[in-house]
Length: 106
Length: 106
Image 1 (cartoon, rainbow over the protein chains, first blue to last red):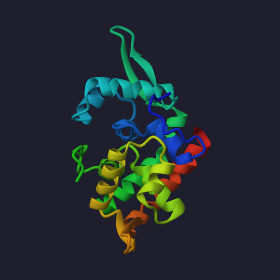
Image 2 (cartoon, rainbow over the protein chains, first blue to last red; image 1 turned 180 degrees about the vertical axis):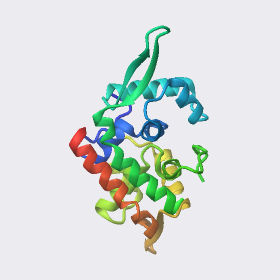
Image 3 (cartoon, rainbow over the protein chains, first blue to last red; image 1 turned 90 degrees about the vertical axis):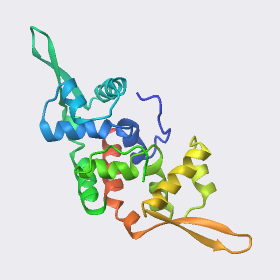
């Protein structure tokens, strides 16, 4: 799905990084874990410094991997928000150990 | 230490990513966990596709964060190998959950 695979299909770590290893991706997931469903502009506000093209690309990649999905929450005007899928929620332990390590060691 | 901080000093996840979130960095750590001390050329062989400048930069950053250290293992000719520090070894649980997730979901 990503154009910059690590090419190590036998390694669980590399396969995880192929899906969530690009810059900003993990912080998008963190926001969804912390805040629940989010609109595009919510990410823009919380992820200060992310270029819009990059944010759009990361959301598309996450959707392509089945980790997040878009839902209409208003018909008129049409408005979308992003949700974690069950597969996305299964990344909770990954974010949890990163959070704990960052608090202890950074 | 890195020039591309996420600038979110309050967030443990962002602080962890500031240290290990750059492309290839986690696979360098994985190799050290799997194989023990490694020479520069060992990384070049196992991380097929990493540009030499990138590998050198990642090793420098990891050393700057105190996660790895260089040791001379031969005086003549001088030869260096890279080791995990105690702080680097404390990342074991992060890699472990990434490995488990990748095996289940990739």
